[in-house]
Amino acid sequence: MPPRRSKFPLHRPFEKQPATTSLSEAGLRLVADIYTDRATVLGTGIVIAGHLVVTAKHVLLDLLDAGAGSEGLTIDHHLCAVQLLPGPQYVIWDVKAALLDPIADLALLQLDGNPGRSHPDKPIAWRQPLVNPFPPAVGESVVGFGYRSSSIEVSQNDQGGPHVDLQDEPMASVGVVREIYAFRRDALLPFPCYQVSARFDGGMSGGPVFEETGALCGIICSNFEGSHLDGEPISYVSSLWPIFRLRMNFARGDGWPRDRFYFGIDLARADLVRVMDMDRLNRFFADHVDSSSQSLDR
Image (cartoon, rainbow, N blue to C red; front, side, top):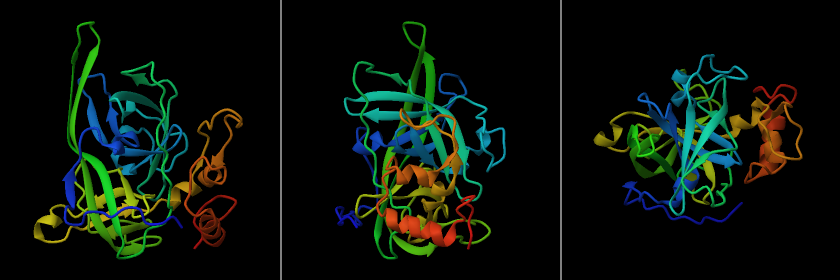
């Protein structure tokens, strides 16, 4: 288990971050129809491996022409992920494919390999987080990150091409784990999640949640709107282990067979997704997930 590296500022529980925060390297803005007058900022996502982003399923539902849980979902809009690298360097990735979890509020996005870039001569080297598929213990601190108050305007530049003006507020929200629901909470949240005392505003959905070791431990899911006005915020984070049972055929790079289906746990076993405790994930799958279909077997 990695040592605790972070001391989250509980006395500053909801704080705007600088536009050039290092979290913008992994935390991406998800935008639909970016070069049109219908451009819309949907939410946040995070890179967990090369060209692989995880986000909340609910931020994508209005864009898809197939129901949740289908393989080979078709995005009925131009969907992209906007990344800010040091420099600053803006990178706009087209989303090539999307896979929605049939139960959990989680989705995987495959990024195309030829992004639009403000500095095309500079190499792209992003950070890959360590992933904890399971919630931290009750009482431990976490921090969520996402973009709120987003607006986007598209105009024409001097060369006749589109100029995109994207404005938002990068926010970090600190809280404590209050309750853990290993498989489901109730009919409203019928999937693995946990309750935290962090405030999550609109636009932060799909953003990363980190534990005290610095590992990614969940995805911002939902909250009781306005709960922070009456006392402690009540919010929910999706646990990450369900993505490892998903079946996909996203390209994995040179040296891997193309157009072959595999499961998310295969990415972890190949160290393409860096999992904190692989032995624990393997034991969990052996006990709770049917190995032939990767469906939940409780």
